[in-house]
Structures are given as C-alpha cells and as structure tokens.
Image (cartoon, rainbow, N blue to C red; front, side, top):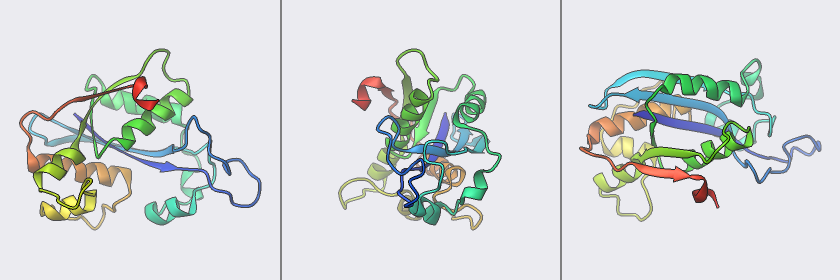
Length: 199
C-alpha cells in the first residue's frame, strides 16, 4: 500500500488582477506537494516519496496555505510541473495501486488534477483505504464526524517528531502510516473511486 498525502493551493484575489484570482471549476485545488510512504503487509515503512510541484493554475500561494504549510512562492522556483511530478510518483508506486489516505478529499483532488492535465484517456479508477475512517472507529471518536490527524496521533500515543510538521504532505503521510501500523487492521476495506463520484 502507498500511504498518500497532498497539499494544495487555491484561488485568491491578491488585487492585482493576475492569474489565479478566480477558481477554475475543473480544478479548484491545485496540488503543490505529494508526499507518500510505501508500507509492506505488516504496515512497516519501506520507502518514501516527496516532491514539490510548481503551481500553474494559482501561481501565487494563498495566504492561508502559506500560514499552515509554511510554503512560500520562492519554495517552488525550479520545481517540476504536475505532469512531471505525477510521472515520478507513478514510478514510485510501481504496481502497488492501493492508496491509503486520510479521508476522501485527497483522492478527489488527485482525480481533478490528473484529468485537468489530461493524464488519462479513459475513466480513472482508484483503489483506496480511508485510514481516517478506520482511526475514527478505532478510537471511539464521539464528537460526530471524523477525527483529525493530529488528534488521532495524540489519541494513539504516537510520538510527534519535531522535524515532521503537520500540513506537510510527507510528514502527514508518515503520521498516517504510523496510525495504520498502530491500529494494524486485519483486512482494511478497499474502496473504489471513479469518475462517477465526482459528479
């Protein structure tokens, strides 16, 4: 399984009339970082992947995105575009086509970015495991909805690494993988996402 996390940029009106002031309905959330951890059958980490992606749709980093991720526009100078980054990510995945994600939103955003850039010629089908749903049930989260990643890490007594900040795709993928290992589900439900889910 590949435990995946994404960071996004989105439209913001900086008052200069530049590109990215209005959201594109085809891709409202532009991926600017892919982080992933490959795990074996016992959920031990066997490799990781991390890449920053140059924003094209929304070239300037949204102030809120900058606040939570710490990323600034200068961080993306020289970064590859999405098609280049996605090609490298697919090379990392290899034949392991089951993605483990914290919730559903990353799968949806990945689909939007793939199709926006024309990287598929047919209906996209993705297999994924919703680790957030598993963790919410495991810890008996009773506030309604689903538990957040940081709250789940704390509830499961997983050590927070000072070098791994939340809202960084690789760090969040790492914590998600650690949660999966801690819970150690016997047969996690594999869900299917395809283009019909986006409508």
